[in-house]
Image 1 (cartoon, helix red, strand yellow):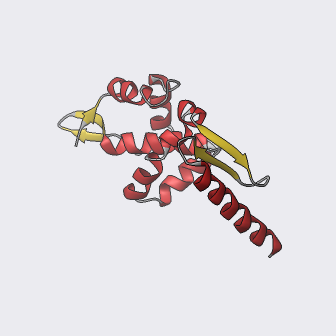
Image 2 (tube, one colour):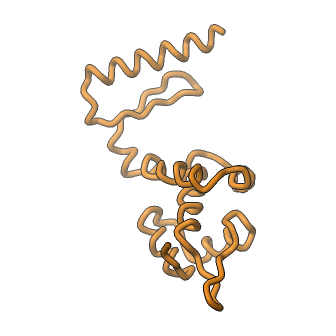
Image 3 (tube, rainbow, N blue to C red):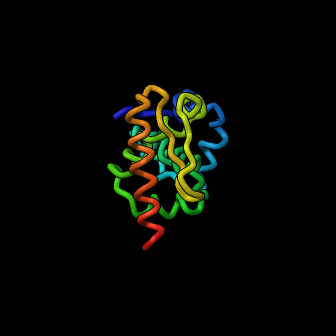
Length: 139
């Protein structure tokens, strides 16, 4: 398992979210959103698990979750669940979203489909999701 200083962790995270900075990393750690640092020898360090938590935090924040909500969710999630959430971060990055076409199905459902998807498949996806939403609204 890799070990990081706060600065090293910040540098890794900045490749995924330019808005992440050292002060923010330290703040999230200090207020307990991210698990406490691990002690290795006589040093406190961040590990890959901390990196997973930060990626999940960024993903959830970009999806509209509040910091308090994220903190509560983290208390109930296994590290495997945290990793799965963090793996979705690229879906919320602006440059990735710019390559997708967005369809508003209802006020609660917005569909983002890669522009690489064939028009035929895109039509089927939109039709299927619209049908599910309509059936759900009927009851």
